[in-house]
Each structure stands twice: as C-alpha cells, then as structure tokens.
Amino acid sequence: MRNHKKKLGQHFLNDKNIINKIIMSIKPKMTDSFLEIGPGEGALTTPLLGLIKDIVLIEKDKDLIPLLQNRYIESNNVQIVNNDILKCNLSNYLLGKTRIIGNLPYNISTEIIFKLLPATSHITDMHLMLQKEVVDRMIANPGSKVYGRLSVMTQVYFKVTKLFDISPNVFVPKPKVHSSYINMIPKVSPFSDNNEDKFKKLVTMMFTARRKMIKTSLRDYFDESTLKNLSINPNHRPEVLSVEDFLRISKYV
Ligand code: SAH
Image 1 (cartoon, rainbow, N blue to C red):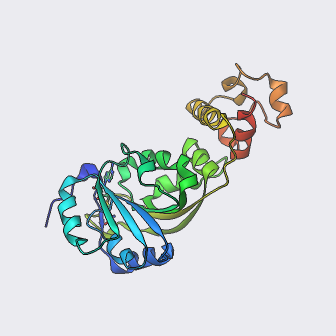
Image 2 (image 1 turned 120 degrees about the horizontal axis):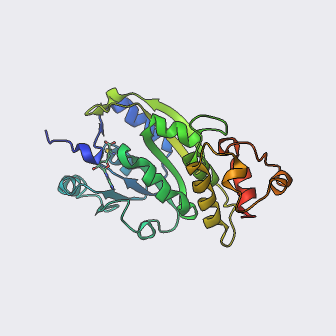
C-alpha cells in the first residue's frame, strides 16, 4: 500500500456504509455538474460517477494523478486536474452552476472555505467534510465562545446544515480528530456595489480585537450615540453581534 502524505491531509474514506450515506445525502441527478476538491483515490468519485452528468477533480498530489487517470480511463465525463485548490483560478472550473463536494484536507480547510465563499453565484450547493471543531465554528451563533470571523463570513454567504458527525474509524489512516459532514446552500447576496469589501474588512477588524468593546473598535467611525441609533450597544463585544448587525454597521463605515 502507498504511503499517505500527512502534509496533504490524506485520510481516505474506507467504509461502504458512510460512503453510501454521503452519496445518498447529495441526491445526485443526471443533469448535475460537480467539482470535487481532493478526490484522493476516488472513494467518493467512483460511486457518484454513474449518477451525474460530469465531474472535475482537483487533486494537488501529483502521485495520485496516474492512479486516477487509470481508474477513470473509460469515463468521458471526468476531468482530472493536478492543481492546488488554493492557487487555482476557481472561475475556470465553476462554469454555469456547479455542485461542490469534498472530504477536505483539514490543515487548510478554513482557507478553502474562505476561497469558496464569495463564489456563491456559481455554486448550486456544497457537501463538505471537515474537522468537527471547524464546523462548530462555522455554524456558531452570536454569544457562543466559538462564534467569530469564520461564523459570520460563512453565514452571510451560505445557509449551513450539519448532516452528521463522522468517527475517525472510517478513514485510513485514522485522523486524530472527529469530523462533521455538512451541506451549504448559497443565500441571496445581501451586498451591493462596494459594500462586500467593507463588510469583510469590518468583520476582520472587529474579531481581531475580540476582547475590545464595540465603541473602542469603532471609535474612528462612530460615536456612541450613532451606534445606539443603529441599535448596537456600544459597550458590548463583537461576539454578540449577529450577521445582520455587521451588515447594518458596514453600510455606515
Ligand atoms: N476524497 C478522498 C480523499 C480525502 S483526503 C476520500 O474521501 O477518500 C484529502 C485529499 O485532498 C487528498 O487526496 C489530498 O492529496 C488532497 N489535497 C490536499 N491539499 C490539497 C490542495 N491544496 N488542493 C487540492 N487537493 C488537495
């Protein structure tokens, strides 16, 4: 058996029941075009292939490419791309409306999420597997200890549903962490003109100063009474602000 590359987060699914459960939850259709991030040896790709229109596989590990090419040599609806999802130009692969799947490399999963988020208009939905703690942060509500930049940015672009947790035992090699499997559906964009960029900067700035009161973080932009007019308590910390609060503030920064 080949060696798994730890630095590429290679933990391959090796359990028929879980793979079936994942494929069922995707509800594949013959008209669907897919993009898979990190197909590995094709644990998800192979069972999906006969049920869909076509799929693009983006795999960074060049040593896996010959194996994949060989495995799908007879399939004319598979495009294999040896590339890094963080470095590639996503718009080359998100033609029309695409469904995204992936059992993500956990060491770079938040970077991948941040790259995918603004692409909502080209995405039908995403089914992703991530480390459980990362999912907890993505779905956290205001006031929670793990609510932060990742929660706000994820939830402004997508409606996220956790479908189920996955034990380390179904992977080879076993990861040290637990996993969660999620569904993400794009929301209608609340942004117009240039306010997407302002929103991103505001959220980053406020969570970089997580322990500071809102009035302190925003003192260059608002006095206390303006914050109160926006229904924001100036003495609170950013972790109590909802996505809607951030949107409202960002319009006035
Ligand atoms: N989907 C497979 C493999 C999951 S492991 C399965 O479930 O069995 C994660 C996969 O992502 C590995 O194949 C790894 O080589 C690949 N990968 C790691 N970093 C990547 C990157 N930056 N871009 C694309 N693929 C990457």
